[in-house]
Amino acid sequence: MENEKEIKPPAGKGADHPQDKRYSSPRDMLIDLVEKMSAQIPKEKQKTFNDLMIKNMDLDRLSLIIRDSMVKHFTAEELSALADFYGSPVGKSAMSKFGNYMAEAMPQLQSLMIESAQKTQNQMKK
Image 1 (cartoon, rainbow, N blue to C red):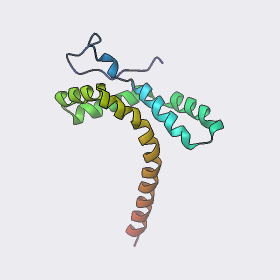
Image 2 (cartoon, one colour):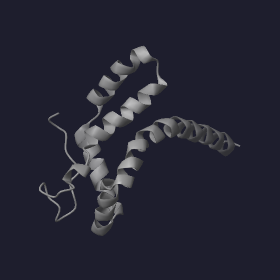
Image 3 (cartoon, helix red, strand yellow):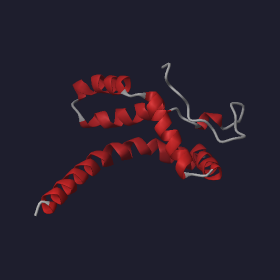
């Protein structure tokens, strides 16, 4: 995809760095998450759902959100440590489970947040 951007490695770790492949693109992360999310819908609609979600996602904006948020909240040293962790066997194992975790937890969390917001609105009207 032309607007796909990779998450850049910390300073001092370039394309020739042996662990360079540990950095997934936002598109790769999106594909994994969308595939896991689609398990919640009927099988015959999953491919269409996956294709449309990926097509409709603004990957440039997604990349910018991820990068800007990480840079805002983490130091360069912390980002490097996170990259090292996610490049390790344990980190790779954890990340391979992340899509399933998000697909299971997000619908429940969204429902809980909506329920709590509705209760709060009702109580504030009193």
